[in-house]
Amino acid sequence: MSDALEVRTGLPEAHRWLLETYPRLRWHDAELGEVARFWLQMHAGFRHKQAEMERHVTVWRTGGDLVALHRGLIPTLQAYLQHLDGHHRVETGHYFPVMRRVEPRITTGIDLLDADHEAIHGHLETLFKAGLAFHQALAGGALDAADRAARLAEVLDRVTPAACRHLEDEEDIVIPLIQRHADAFAH
Ligand SMILES: [Fe+2]
Ligand SMILES: [Fe+2]
Image 1 (cartoon, rainbow, N blue to C red):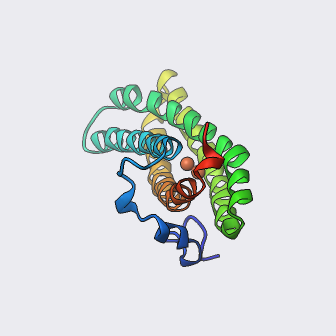
Image 2: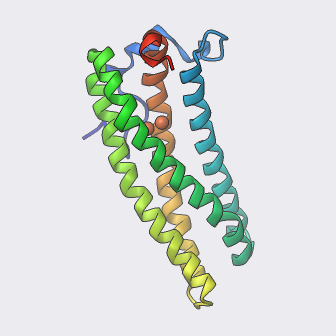
């Protein structure tokens, strides 16, 4: 499926019409509602954590030591896994059903985002296991701790672009949608 998270390079054309009603250039305007603003802040937090994890991996790959990698990476990874999983649950469980109701024409777009969540959920499980394996190897003084770190870094290399793709494509749907149906999202 060409729309799958792993292969697509942007939100497919069929779901972009909402974005045309409220282009990214206007997202910094004062008129952007509180819920949309909060959504973008959450996503910025995930991007920030991803960049931080990438930075730790790069330092290690260019000659840094394993203990420093562990100290820098594992707490960020834990927070990232927990927050992203929670965020997706709220989106899929609460916000997406509201969006399907108030804007039925975007149903297939929301389907795509829900499918992304499923794909990312699998990635997060792999990431969790790889993180745990590295943590246990290092804490237990295992000889293969460096291999475990390399494996974790490889998984991150794969997961981060997919997560980034989802964040951006989701914004292209939800920010204009929230703006268009502000009443449905007012607290
Ligand atoms: Fe999402
Ligand atoms: Fe999101």
